[in-house]
Every structure is written in C-alpha cells, then in structure tokens.
Image (cartoon, rainbow, N blue to C red; front, side, top):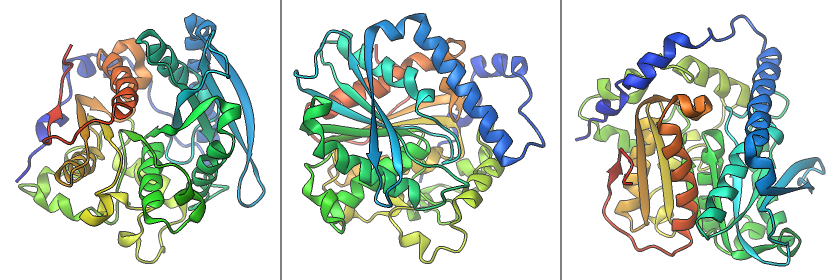
Length: 364
C-alpha cells in the first residue's frame, strides 16, 4: 500500500520563498482573473525571450481551422539556422491554466527553452504550440476537439512545418497534460478515423498532469494505505492550485452533469484499463509533490509501467503545482526544464520497458 506524503512536505526553498510572494488576487470575476493572469504570463514570457531566447529560435505563425470552422492560433519554434527543408522531430506543446488561462505568446519562453536545449544537446526538434479555446466561452469538449483537430492538421501540413511524421511527441502542462493523455488514448481507440490514420504518437510528456476528472478518482487510488494520505487531503489548501481552485475550473468546463464521467476517457484517461493502455507510447511524467494532483499522476505512471509502457516518473518534492513560474527562485525549475526536454528525446530513442521507479532528484 502506498504513502506519498513525504513528497508533499514543503521544501526549505519553498518555505523561504512563500512569505515573499504577493497575495493572490481576491474578489475578481472570472473575466478579470483570466485577463490578469494572461497578462502576467505573457509579460514573464516576453522577459525571458528578451533575456536571450529570441535569438536562438525562429518563429512562424499558422492558422488551424477547427471542425466547427473556427480559426485556432498556432506557432512553431525552430532552432535558428536550421531551415524548414531540414526535417526535424516535432513536439506538440499544450499549455496549462485550468482550461481558462493561456495564450499563444504566454508559451513562447517554454517552447523556446525546449528548442534551445535540444539544439545544444545535438538532437534538435521543432515545437508546435497550439492555442486551443478556453472556458468559460468554450466549455467541454471544445478544447479536446481543438487538440485533436490540430494533431490531424499537423500531419496534413508536416512538410510545411518541416517535421517528421513518425517522430511526433505530444506533451503539455496540467490541463495540457490531461489533453495529451486523452489524445494518446483516443488515437489508440480508433473511433476518430482521422486520428487513427495518422502515424502513432511517438511519445508523451505529462507535466503536473490531471488524469482523472476529480469527482471520479481512479480506482488505483484505493492502493493508498489510508484515504487520509491522499494528496487531495494533504494538499487540499496547497499554494497555486488548492482544491477550491480546481473546483472553479471544473465548474467552468461545464461537466457537472456529464453522464458516465468515470468511463469517459477524455475526462478520465487515468481510469483506462490495462488493455486500453498497453500500446501507449513511451511516457514521461513530471509531478509536483505539494499538489492535489500528485497521487493520480504517480499511480498513472505505475499503471503504464505495469502494462509494459516505457515510463519515466519524476517527482519534484515539496513544491506546489506550476512552481516553474518562479524560475530561478526555486532550484527545481532547472530540473523541470531537463525533464521536459530530455523526455522528448528519450521517447524518440524507442526505449525498452522497465520497472516502475520514482525519481525524486537529479541524476546529474
């Protein structure tokens, strides 16, 4: 029986940092909160780009037409000096933000860091950043459908992107990781003939993922020694993403009355059965220790490994959900970048399955 509570004890760095942080905004409408956080994220990304990233990458914008005719923004990031005529593996990036927050430009620094890291290590990639639609204007399942449409669009336009169809890794952060896991399962199910016709996803990178619609906990959570050890209990009031904030995001998705949510693999990919996950691609997970989502990510990794999927599971002990926003103020930010970047390259090596292992510190 499992007990992951050791990972939830706030780290010394976090205990030192937290009192210096500004109070989170209060009494804002959803629209005001969305505008404030998008502005903050865009400003942070712009600063990082000016600090040296912009010269290392070449950006190109695209418009993807969704199934309902709506245009979606997309942007590629390619190492400077490598022309489109040189085909590269592709990493599809899906941002986090509870399906409420996130813009195309808010992801510029994240995507550029991946590109520069892989170029420096001699295994360059091109990143495709997709700005799927957000709540409250677009509830479930719009974002999921946008991601599926963008995946098909990529393969239809792979030459223009300068990518390699058989080397497409998909990944995301938080809500983006949720949709990544859902997309990988949807392609295997084959219900959408367009997805099934595309080359199989070569790998997935799930950072601080939600993999279970939180009213329908994955059955594997019964493997905890006690319900009181659940990350939903230990981390209920954790910084950044307390359970109350998760409830807000869920309400905005409009899935309160969705029938059979526990069996809906879009909503709960973490509940997939053994026969459903057995052909999934190599999977990297990055999990924050002081995060309500911690346990479902750890159990999903265990479930994949037990069913023959090459799996790398990394825990960042003592830090909250989305801690990477604090950059160099937390030393785990550097390891976060390494886990994302190396997870892409590792998937493309066609790794062999191995035992389930939780990596909680850098191996460097």
